[in-house]
Image (cartoon, rainbow, N blue to C red):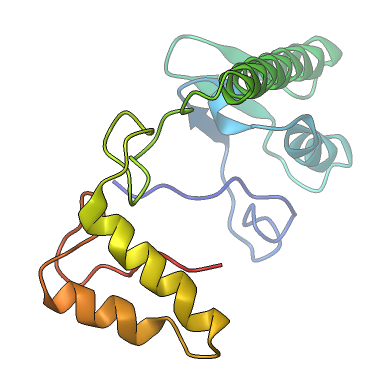
Length: 170
């Protein structure tokens, strides 16, 4: 099943090309719109009478009539609440990652190349390659050939599949 981006203009909602629809069906309004501005685009289309469409139905029994002030308010309230919760989650994640960084702890994700899973212990077989990659640019040479020769020797990035890109050297 294909998913489509939420339309943000009259054209992308299919309203300027003669395409008509009566209802938007979604799981939840908060899944249809991620940002309050996205919901306002659709509300504006209905309010300015550029379309005869005016109803959002959800698969969970929700019904929003954008011809009524109560329906527009309900959509705005739901989307604003979801955007607020998204902001709260972002704040919590950012604070947690900052706290982990201040304590010198890894913040999740894949293991760093050159280290074992604890993020502290050096994996010597990979550290040799990192040292070589840092020496080459300092000597005015590209780091690519070093990586290519090391992959030919069977050393790959963490969770690598054949043909994966090497880590970048900065």
